[in-house]
Image (tube, rainbow, N blue to C red; front, side, top):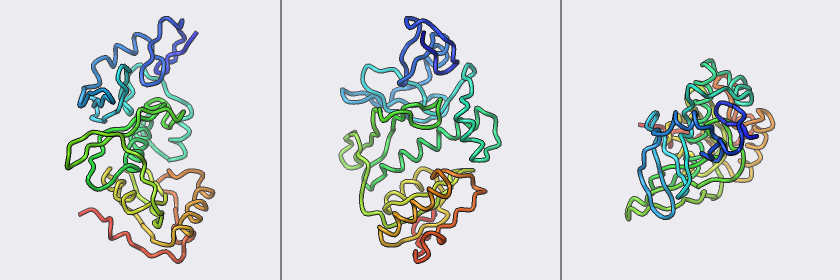
Length: 246
């Protein structure tokens, strides 16, 4: 017996279909049959956009998928996601909280691939929209379009010297981390508001970020959580103005 990831109904293996890495029953499959609209399709990747919320998702050729964010009337709450929502002090319904967590997860993933000259188009996160976080490392990847040539290609995560410790806000959620100017710019491009960005030698930034993770257990916290970057990086230089949105 297998279990539908969306409604949790237990069904014989022959009555489930693999969609977005997970098993869906036929009634749940019908609910989202027309949800995803194609944006790009070639031998390497399919990129589809949700007709409900507009979020794009990458998908392998020959695979079936659904929105990374949207749940539906047959969806049931995941207790693990509700624990995350409680920790983040979200006050919406269980579905609103789940979709907010998933949307923020997608934006953070996209921000990690931001770079000048490339338009980031879509990503794929195993486990969304149901779990609010990545289950496994399997993914169809993050894809973007070269602004000069128009070529659509898979993007690799930029790993440069990390000289910035940052705190940004996605709606009611705060995200801290370390990275390059492109990393912080990526968060801003995805709609985040820069709260504080400190510049310091990369090793000091790495140690400071690790101290923050030990203090808060996660890089995502409630906006009411006091995250003090100067407490862990007292010699950091405030460069927030570089990233303020006009």
